[in-house]
Length: 158
Image (cartoon, rainbow, N blue to C red; front, side, top):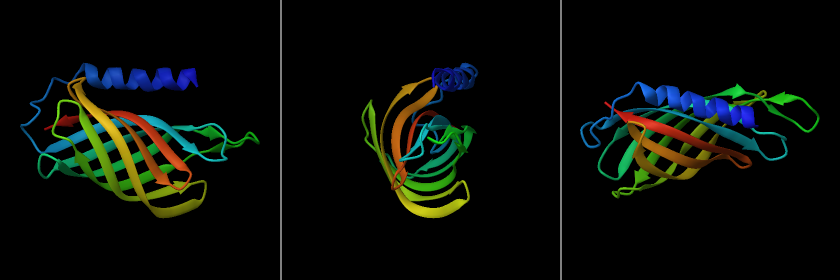
């Protein structure tokens, strides 16, 4: 688990190192990178997923987001078998208009996990702040009943 966390931190440091700070209010379009742990109830150890976000700010509180994640490091079941999950989500995201951003999102997620493919209602909560040249967000997302994604990411405005 420590190796996975170190890998995740390294990816974000490398991504943020070459990006200059964007004007916070200049563009409605943003692209982001995120990574984190997907935990499935009863599956054993969590999988490590890496993802991309594309968003469009509709007004100062509402944005539309598309998120794609894929498993970078498989999780392990109690019986020692590997498992993974790939997701494609569409969300309506609500952010507070404060220095520290509070975020809530609702939408649909299509996921593929070991032959199980389904589309489910998803929701999440998060907190964001301006760092690493963009809007850094820490989020909890329930992708499906019993399938949770805890992530950290950075959105860059263009």
